[in-house]
Image 1 (cartoon, one colour):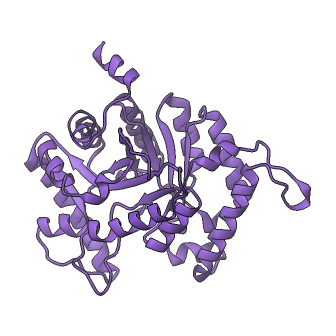
Image 2: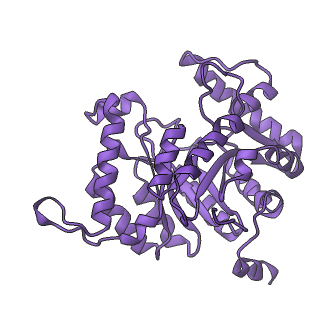
Image 3: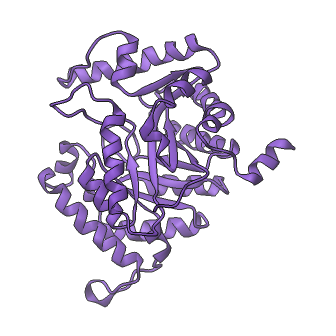
Length: 345
């Protein structure tokens, strides 16, 4: 019987997609994470993307998180994810070991196969081999962190055995989830994912609940489950204001999909919100929407991101505040005790 989680952990996920130059993107994203910490969030997560500014805008997660670590003190810092097939495994092991020390042991490490075919080609890697390379690199990183002898008898310095219990694996499949469970790692669920060809109208719940089942079935007896559910969420004080920003952001995404040959069913804002698995509105609106999400209810860690809406920076800061004060508590989260004491002063 798995251990019951009595308090969900709350995360903020930023894709660094503000409509500004790269340096300003990084500055604003750091401010958003600092604001999340000030509002009691337990963790902050960033994604890695190579080349494509419209997809994520951050190729170097360890560099960015080192900067954020120096400006925060409590919030845990996670990669969601490092696209491992395009990395040198030993360099990842070294960078994460150093980053964990510099952050005071606050690092959470998420890995995935990720990346577009063009990204793999730029690194001289065959996209069809991504799964094979991913498995090899992950094994090398685990061995290096554990202090095992590497090629030539070398040992990683500094080694980082503590990170072995802070690995998260992202997957779209039940088989991948079962493997994550068998290795005792955390499971990362995406904010959205492709629908199966034989069931294009499937809900995110219908897709992700079997993935969670597979993960739990593989988890060793006595191992506490770690299930991170990420969702697209933009909350504002006023419903019309929230929907106005959603209209801008989601139609921009729909236009990019159309240019790439993908079609989103329907053309109304409601259609776009549904197709892109987004939750938009006032605190009451999004609480009602999220309470219907049975997969999210099973997560031990809930993370929210404003992508694909990507509203202006000030709106993101306000959304963070409303998530902490109204939305997350309705889903089973409470602020850390120390944070509540600070807020009360």
